[in-house]
Amino acid sequence: MKKKGIGFASAWQGSNLHFGHPDVSTVLIELREDQKFYVGVAAADLGQGIPETTALIVSRVLGNLPLDKIVMIDPDTGATPDGGATGASRQTSVTGNAAFNAANNMLDLLKSVSSELLNTSPSEVEFKSAAFFNQDGENVTLSDVIDEAKNIGTSLSVIGSFKAPSTEDLDEKGQGYGVNQFGYATYVAEVEVDTETGEVDVLKISTFVDAGRIIRKIGAEMQVEGGVTMALGHTLTEEFKQENGWPLTDSFTTYLIPSIYDVPPEISAHFVEEEVPFGQLGAKGLAELVLVPVAPAVINAIYDAVGVYVTSLPATPERVLQAIKDQTPDL
Amino acid sequence: MPTLKMIVNNEPITLEVDALRPLVDVLREDLGLLGTKVGCREGECGACTILLDGKAVNSCLIPAMRAHGCSIVTIEGVGDVDNPHPVQVSITEEGGVQCGYCTPGFVMSAVGLLNKSPNPTEAEVREAISGNLCRCTGYNRIVKGILKSVEK
Image (cartoon, rainbow over all chains, first blue to last red; front, side):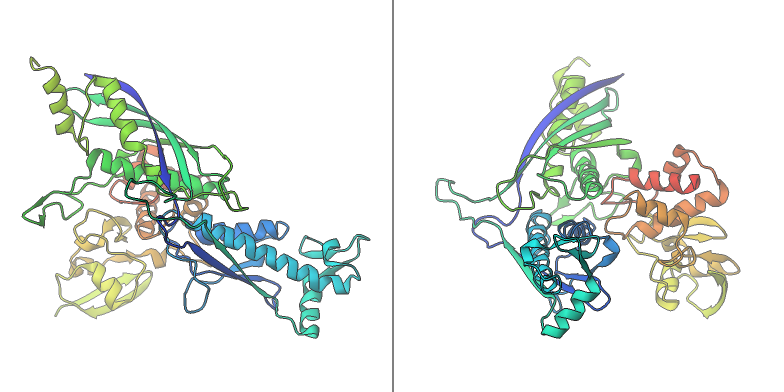
């Protein structure tokens, strides 16, 4: 018989470097002869899309500058400032705020140079549609500003840095400011359990995630869907077996990561954009947070369906069936 | 060593090969076609998918001489940045690419499907890529991308 169930779970997960490790990123922006803004930061992209996110932040600060005017320099600590490790769900928050600061520094510099040409003060200059306007509506172009910078011998190159609030190691009672930022998430899992085979079919996962302000929605949704899929693996199929220190599950035939048939056709992402504890950007990391609620939500849904708790992961058909049998010995 | 003659991306190729060498190694090492990826070498992950006479196959499981007299298409023969295939455009637009390692294999499986079924159903698309593993995306955006490329 197949029985359906629904389960909920919530999680919070710290992001950024913890326990006293300084967490800093620096972003370089340069306006070059071709009137494009070159943005450099050694922040590795593992597929999460930090170059696209960084370009979007710079674009928005610079008056929604078209993205084809922004060139991301390939990350390289030998050629670009260090963004720090891609880990701890930190790049959008830390490098994102550094990009925000760098873009504001660039804006200040450009206003200062253009104000000479517009016979006004820097604070009176407005930058929009890739041109600089004074209060009388007179304007100069990026090209004019680049020429003026050469005339006065100024480099149109800035950096912006950001350091997340310093954390500390926890004391012997486990107390202290160890983590400067948490993300929060609540998930709903809908499953169908086959009571004869113990197989669990995940029908739908709905996610509600607070990662502060979402900068690039498609990127955030992609992280949620990918994270949920990865977590479905450790929840239902991925079991690392070893014997005397030798791995027994050393291939994709024995260590089962989710295939397309293991993933529900609908993983919905809803974002709850609450205020964040620091940084003008308003964003928090979400990459790791999005995995956490999957296992408890699915295990609760299995309980709702068949009335048994599976207490060790992954909840393979064998374990689910055993739990059902243990509860009803007459079966 | 025997002489292997095959067409690769519309170009005739002749080379001396160890007959049982996996075709993926010939493509990558001898021909420098690095777009075809090696994931598992046992036909489980689909990263090395190519077209052999129009049909999607795992090139890690094909002995080199099996390709003798055949026409091979790799991801390089499908499209590139300047001239992408509609499947490549749509998968990218739909957000079906993250780290990208599995992507060439998915594109080849999709192109193999479209060769035999130009207007596939969603179920056919899912079946066609069921032999391709992806750790990043959760698959649904890849499905949407392939279906969208057909609508165009």
